[in-house]
Amino acid sequence: MLLDGHTDELPVEKQPFPGIEMQREPRLSYPKDKTFGAQPHSLQRAVPKKDRQTEAEMTDPERATPVSDSNLADPIGCALHVLTTLRLKPEGLRRDELQDRIDTSPEVLDKTLERMMAQDALRYEKATKTYQLSFSVLQSVLDMLRTRNLALVAQPELGQLRDLSGETAVIAVDDGKQSLNMGHALSNHPIRMGDRLGSTYPYHCSSTGKVFAAYFPQDRLRTFLNEPLPARTAHTIQNRTELEHELNETRRRGYAITNEELVEGRRAIAAPIFDGSGTVVGAIALSGPSFRVTPARVPALIEAVKAAARRITERLTRADLTPVNPPRITCLSPTPVREVSSPKWSKERRAFIWLDLEANAIWSANEGEAPKILRKFDTPIKTLVNTSGDQIVALTESKLINLSTGKTSLLDTSIQSAVPGTANDIWAVADRHGEKVLVNITLDGQSSDHAVLPRGIGCMAYCAVTGSIYLGFPEQGVIQSYNLITRHLKQICQFSKATGRPCALAIDAKWNLWVAFADGWGMAKLNLNGQILARYNLPIPQPTGLHFGGPEMKTLMVTSHRAGLGEEVLENAPLSGQAFCIHFND
Image (cartoon, rainbow, N blue to C red):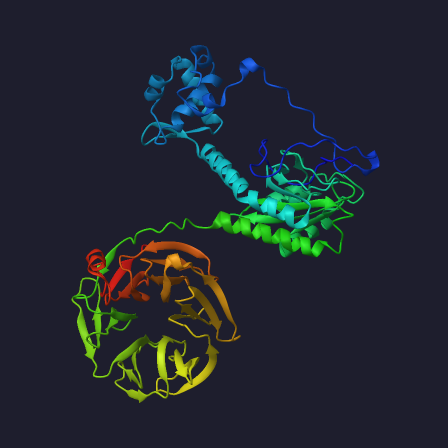
């Protein structure tokens, strides 16, 4: 066996990964019939010292060797100069502007531009009469940046996977012809699978190659299956029907496995890595000798590889979570008050409504309209609910007041917070004998217990698509979901105390969950699994409610309070104690 044999994985840089042990160790010789992988590749020709360019020259244009007239006398040298010139001018340059910047003859420049256009390196914009870098060149740059980002993101996962399993971990990419090894973390066992950076492996008999082939577009897959499938070992799949079945299974189960198909005595497992569009951009694999990677051990290693691939995918697809300012804000309240809450959108009135706890009144307003009081109450109102039937309901300590019908019903329980259900009913958190109980309330005030919930609930929202109620626990910083059908309660995310305390929840028209934070001056947009998609700054420290409304349900209404806030805070947060709208474009 060779200490540094090959494994079957992806595209690569020709320098070791930073932070991953890559030093060359002395080779241990073993009998030839025990060798894993092919013999080492021949060394590349060394570059003569006089032809080398220093790193400073390559990275600093001021120190780089200037392009001489002799270089520009031929189209190749001229083409390189055209590329570097247009790289700094993304809007493009006219023919005369290029001539002014490139010291070459008009004939050579014209010939160069003609050839570069024919090779799709440049495009010509007739409207502005400018030459610009072609979209294929720009895509190549994006691909390079994507590959570099993949390498950086995958680096810690390679080390962790190697440490968990003791075997060699590899990250690979599809180079268009084969699977290419772009980085690895080598096993510390004396007998190990040691991939060389830059090694390539066939699609049909390597674990990472199978991953890429499994996700080929149909046209490319048909072409691939019609190509020869050369045998690397006695176990290589050469039957096209069998290989197609294997690729279908790879896609269905989310991983590929090779059993001595590329190299005798080696077993490897790989899983796909996706970008934000769902395209496979890489694969991570684990490779080791069959006597260590035994069939009994394979299931656990599969889960480790798939978990590493999921984590890399999550990091690649994670949105920029730097908080941004809201696009546009309009104030609805006439004046600041101690506290406003329970923001709602009434389709019938085509207006936002909210509860003024200081005046014990319900207000209504829309952008460009003067706010008006819909109703004042003698009894303190705890919360408002806008039912699925667009009926506005006010809940007091002991009454349900239906503003749409004028009917008042007695409640048999004390309500803390409430959300609309799908059957013109209400789901609420009630206090029952010292416990927090989820109850269902009909519009005639009848309630039925559904489940006992943990204490500490501060806010809630209902999602009709999942049939789940989302609960915020301010002191713990936790968001939980409770499924009304399965009655399963699970935590979907937890926020740091530095972010603030989750104090208000809302569901938008695209079924995203929004969370506002007390003492955090911000809010977050999440998917229903708890993954943060975006963060926004808020102009207030104490939000009390969130609700999406407007004709297209793109406007977010926010309510807040100002009681207990210091003078300096109020001076810098004048919307505290008011209801306002944030207008999103999408």
